[in-house]
Structures are given as structure tokens and as C-alpha cells.
Image (tube, rainbow, N blue to C red):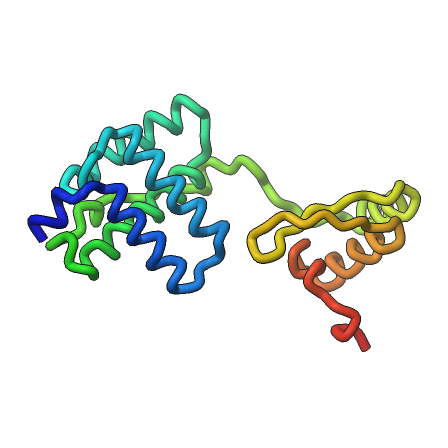
Length: 183
């Protein structure tokens, strides 16, 4: 463990990325997680695993949130990424104990940036009517972690809205539907 504590943090992060890939995590999730870890490690000047400290990380994340005006949700995403990494370090015998066990998340209810609400029946009718009249659009969706552009006609888009409203499906779930899914 002593040797692991002085090994460059970048090497541990590479090993952690391989671990997440081995678990077949979504490539976007892996990329985002590594971005959180790398950015904070660089911002804090942590060259080795032995430098990881909960108090310094909390201070850095708070400072970044204040400077950039980011939400509690973004702060929490950083905390979750770092805590998962530090628990993995303990499980793989890189650390004797979790240095980030005391790191807490923020209350997201007190910092809502996007308040979601139901669409009224009148609004839904207007949205569908506009989708039927509007020109064909290019839609970008993710396939195997890569953006793919497809064209969507007016009737297709209107039906996508109808399906989403009727089922509660998210855009990616509606996009994944195939003709075989319908009777």
C-alpha cells in the first residue's frame, strides 16, 4: 500500500477507467467520471494517491461551484465520482482506508435549476400541431456512445411526442422503439 500511495495518481485513474470499462459502464458515464476526477486532481495539484484529502476536495468543489455558478447537482456528481474512486482504491488494496468517507453531498432540493412540470393538455395539443407543421429536422442521438444524425419528418416527430406523452418514455426510449414494438 505504501508503494501505491506514491504512485502517480494518473496511473490509478487509468486503472480505474479500465475497471469501469471492464464492468461495461456506459462510455459517456466513464468519460464524465474521469473528467471530474482528472479536473479536480489537476486543480488541486494532487500528484499521487497519498495526496487525496476530503477537506481539500470539498473546498475546491465549493470554490469551483461559487466561481462558475454551478448547481448542487454538479457538485454532487463530482462527490459521487470521487467517493466511488476512493472506495475502489480501498477494495483494490491501494489505500488502507477511504480518505473521502466523510465527504458529503449537497441538498439538491435547495438549489433547483430546472423545475420540471407536467405539460397541460392544451400545451401538448399545440406542441403536436406545431410538430406536424414544422419542417423536417435533423436529430442527433447517441449510438454506442457516438453521435448519429438522422432526419425526422414532421409526422414522425408528432408521433414521437404522442408516444412520449402517452407512455412517459424519455426521448432515448422513444428513439429506441422499433416497428416490432407495436401491435
